[in-house]
Image (tube, rainbow, N blue to C red; front, side):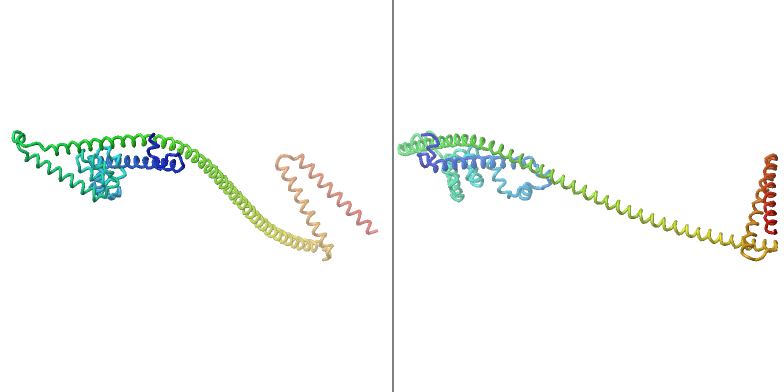
Length: 370
């Protein structure tokens, strides 16, 4: 019968058998993990205490460190340390399910007593029962020590009769102990092999789970990146839309402001033009009034009637005199500039034009007289 069949409750390969075996593997793995965790914690706490590292973390005492930073009482921390200092690692691994309190009590015994007590299914012994067993073991050891100290000399001991029954009982007890030890050794080896097989299976399963989890993580990461990319694109699109809306609004406001300014400038230009037109009109009116007054004065000098035609004639006469005077000023300027020949030609042209005008006036007067 193989190890799997020895552990099964139903030897016919039923689902209940497979379920029980699987549960056993889980228990063995949990026990192994608990033992490893217990030993690791005890060793790390011992190292922290021995090196005084807790002081570098700002704690005055080891108790302050364990209670405030680790969350366990100082007594429990020292239980872990006592286990790693006084109990063999193999024994801890085999009895990790019993808990650190029982293992710390076991540390108070010698190596042989530890093996014997641990072989009594330590996980199912209560703390009170374990304390009583330890007290009995320690008491027996003290009595044995006292007996050894009070033993008679060898010569005197030889004179005593040998108790054969006691020797046989002692030999029987020793044989039982050896058988029990061998049985425990076989159970430990069987448990170790099962643990090894289970750990290998668990390792394969863990690798598979890790690979599945890695694939799932990568899938989630891809989905997250895609989601993030979509969110980023949406944010960029929204930002662009908002920017375009702001630009459009700014352009509209700028156009409105420019149009308003242009309208204001046009209105100001219109008002300025109206003001200039009024000024020009007023100046023209003033000039016309002055010209009329001058024409009326000229008409009086010419002894003409004060009719509208006479006044207009006088105005044109003034303009003719002004034009003739301007022409003479131009001739004089040419003469002064040394251009006498050109000035003489202009003077002759002016004289000819005046003579022709005078002749025309005389001819028209004669016709009207006839």
